[in-house]
Amino acid sequence: MSLKLSAKAAPVLFLVLASVWTAGVYFPYFYSLGFPNREIQHLVAALQGQHLAPPELSSVVQGIINSTGHLKRAIRIAAFYSAEYKVRQPHSLKQTQFSYLAWFEKRPRPTILVMNLNEIQGDTLEFKIFETSPTAIVRVGLLPLFAMAFSFRWIAKGTFDSQRSKRTRQGLQLSESSG
Image (cartoon, rainbow, N blue to C red):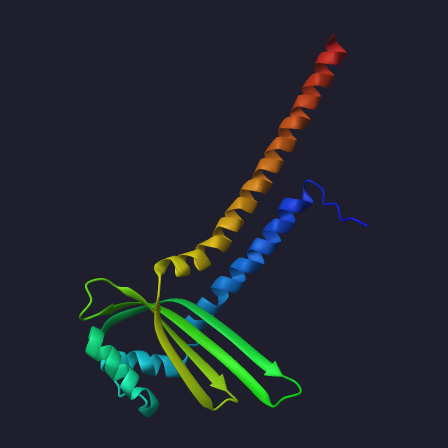
């Protein structure tokens, strides 16, 4: 049995899928603005020189400060959350990842700084700090928006085409009846 979609249902289905995709990408960012992660905020403050770094990260933070200088400004541009709970094993993993557009004292241009926090069993913290390319952030953020724009265009074009064909049929019927 094959599933056939009507000409009107396919663009609407695509719009629904694109909307879910867009919400999945942008909802964590807005959530992070309302409920920021304290550990990552504390780490950003340590890179800015406002707080002391946690003891387990002091060497990493000091290495970043020595090579790039203090963090002058950081703007959060992306957020990602995930959780993994295993039923048969007493193991849980929560991952929080924030991406920042970051300006450092010793760098002429901003960089994209990613801070990843893994919480294992609710108490063990594991941090990863790294840089990423701007194209990765742009690709993740813009692809769902392009999909939504495409689906809106597809729906609009389908509506316009159906109205035009309806007018054409009405015009043909009028010309046949008058002729």
